[in-house]
Amino acid sequence: MAALDSGTPKHEAPEPLEGPVVATITGGTIIWFVLFLVQLPFYGWFADHGHTWWLWTCLTGGGLGLIGVWYVRRRDAAIKRGAGQTAEAAPTE
Image (cartoon, rainbow, N blue to C red):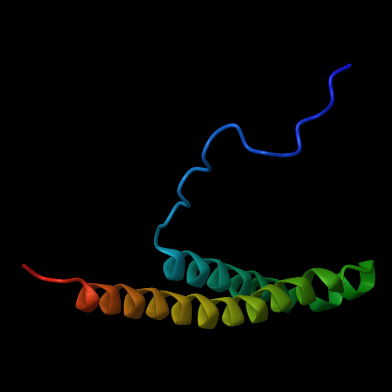
């Protein structure tokens, strides 16, 4: 049996996919909050059946989504600032 390779990749990693990250995270956050609000009128039923964690999961998803929106907006701004600085530093002919 041959020894396993040391983990060296045999091909280059693909470029990361970039898309509308802020919009995606914002949309997901809105969905979590909507799911929470839709389930809220049925709190009694959830409590009777031991499923209140469903509501709290949605609320937690919305809260973490707000942190995610804050994070990706800062990341997006930093990427744009970095791109602007490299464009300024590039020599012009």
